[in-house]
Length: 225
Image (cartoon, rainbow, N blue to C red; front, side):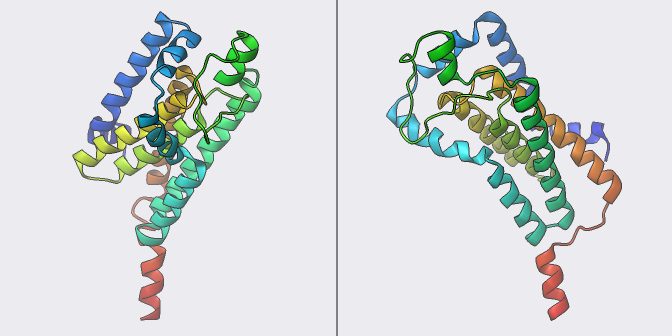
């Protein structure tokens, strides 16, 4: 499968992702990251807190690993291995950027309290208190876009492709809503997640082709029958 084909088959995911990136980039150029974050933070309220507090877990590393294992067991060994590789590479890239390249970039909590000397300006949510360091890029965003873009790749439903994008977007936005990240962090996470997913998907399609399309669960069931 080539790049042109996956682009054409997943326009309903790629086009809104591109719009999100362009819109987000414009916002970043029009305002400072502090002003943009404060504007978003003012909408924190009890009616939204529960939703964003828990949807953010869809970008957790454990979530993508669990989905990869389920795919491997019940759908396709190749799909499970591909998503597992996507999870691993995203994790490596994000941690390298966080800990090596951008190790001095603070998360909102520390940035406002220490850099701007505004310790009490942000609204935080009980049970979701943010960390302080290694803000750029957002690993949860990268993982969410990696997971749901791959699910879009293996789905033939146009409606599901749109739904997958919306879930990835909401998961990414939750990181800003919860003040774990700035808006620029989730934009970078989106780029990482999409780029890694496309590259790993093309690589595995090239080297494996139609091999390993059976699921481990059904293989084992067949052997014991």
